[in-house]
Image 1 (tube, rainbow, N blue to C red):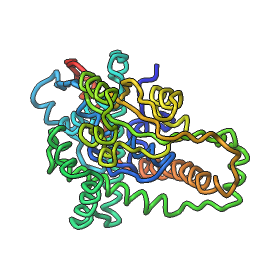
Image 2 (image 1 turned 180 degrees about the vertical axis):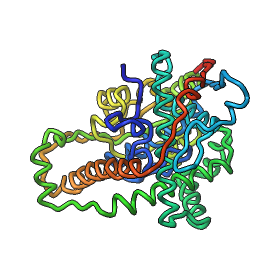
Image 3 (image 1 turned 120 degrees about the vertical axis):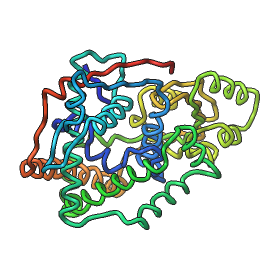
Amino acid sequence: MKIFMWKTSLPRAQNFIPLSIVKKAPLPLSILIDGEGRRGYERFHTIFRTIVYSFFCVFFIITICSCQESISKPLATVDGVKISIGEFNERFTKGLNVSIDRSLLTPEDYNRVKEEALHALIDEKIMLLRAGEISLAISDAELERKIEEIKESYSGEGFERIVSAQKVNYSLWKEELRKRMLLEKLIASEVDAHITVKENEAKKYYRAHKRMYPPETRVHVAQIVVQDRDKAERILKRLKSGEDFGKVAREESIGPEAAKGGNLGFVSQGIMPEEIDAAIFSQPPGEISPVIKSFYGYHIFKIIERIEGTKIKWSDIKEQVTDDLRKQKEEKAYVRWLEDLRSKAAITIDRELLKKVTITLNHGSE
């Protein structure tokens, strides 16, 4: 049974915190990626994967079935740095909220996720200690620049509106952002900086993986996305009565592209979530879709233009292939690098204490 949405090909903690997630800084209000095609989807996917924290009414109570003395004991240590029950609690509940379809979980699954969460924290500590060793840091100026970039991705008071809607503790969010930026900087310095891709390598990779680059059908799509179905159905009625899609998107959509009338740009077939992909590629230009439920919310789409696939030239695909190969090499190098750091770290885990951590789930309405 597959219970993780994040990629599961990497060992242990990478299931919980893979390179692609670290590098995209999976925080509320993540920076968006401008552009079309794959990059347009990354922009779409990143923001809604992170907003989803506030979409699910699931509450977790983690308790320790033991004496108060056990509560003060660390669950694990990394080179003497302690991982507390409270820290583990926060990581576990965030990971469980975002990563897992809770209806599929069994007691064995919870035990597995506890292990995943703990190993994720251990790996994070290892990387942060490494950043300290090489005197890497994120200055206040760097942090403020990043926050300004994030704010600029939203129109008007969009940033403040989402902070309020998600009930974000802004100070804690800033420090979490600083930590994610530090991990990004560390990986860029110690892993990515050493990766190169020559053109002959990229061509060889392309020849071996041509099936990954079929002639692409693309659609130019706009969307309105909201948090609940009733509101989405009311919006759909307004659109069917003749209201302008762009105007309604600017007024009602919670997506960062709302300021542009919901315009997501061109999207290639096969990279959107299945339920969305099926809808937008079966819809003729000019029509408005029904309300579509996804992991991210309730969507209404309008297809602006459709471009059928044509034969691909190397010059057209070169940049994408090179980027794909670079990411693959970075991923492998990251795993080797982290395994090397792990092998040098003194790690202790109190497995008896971990067993005593129990979880109570209270399911709210979606």
